[in-house]
Image 1: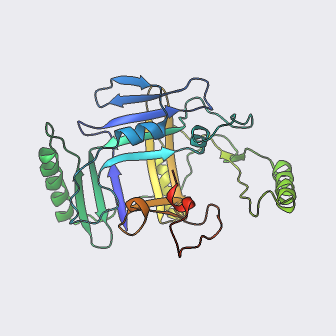
Image 2: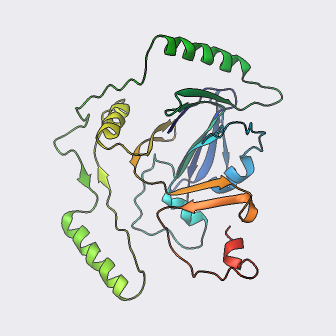
Length: 288
């Protein structure tokens, strides 16, 4: 229903890059809108917990995003949440951070059902967003008055280099052998379900990632799609996502413990069903 658009545009915006335990050079880097960078020796989860502002939100609008952090958490963040060595099989790209976020103090949301634009600004006592909102609202009014609706220009040529479009990280023999290993582990009772994945690589010409995302969105439309590009002197990563399912959602509610409701869909694992007749069981309280 909604499209969210934001970037490093406002005076409060900043880029956060985190290189975790799988990297030889580790650290968290924060770069502001002027290009000044500082390094901190903390994890991305510690930083987000400390830095997420307690903002006053206009609850007259129910929107999926109210400004703040947009980005991604890589699977390797799990090495920060439990003890244990990083597996030697972990594939590490030096210029791809474990996680990266942008703090967005200026963002736009489009409601495709109601055909309404929303402008979201994050302000402080010293810095408001009134001028940006007024100028952007004027641009949007001119845009809609011209009769322009969704523009969907698709280049059906996949901009890749070389003869092989995609190369799997595990070849066919290795992948089939891994499947047999998964079946054996299930028989041994190590798990009731395993999701075996493979990674495919290709070389995309510089500057053509947006065209690649347009192709992906056209050929594989999905409710959870995203295009995000995060580049700096240390790293470079672009996400082209078109997923039929959401990994995890968290929303405020007054009916669950702590005022938050966390939904993993499809399921990410199970615990024994608790007896809800007495006191709330510990596993429902201690979720951090």
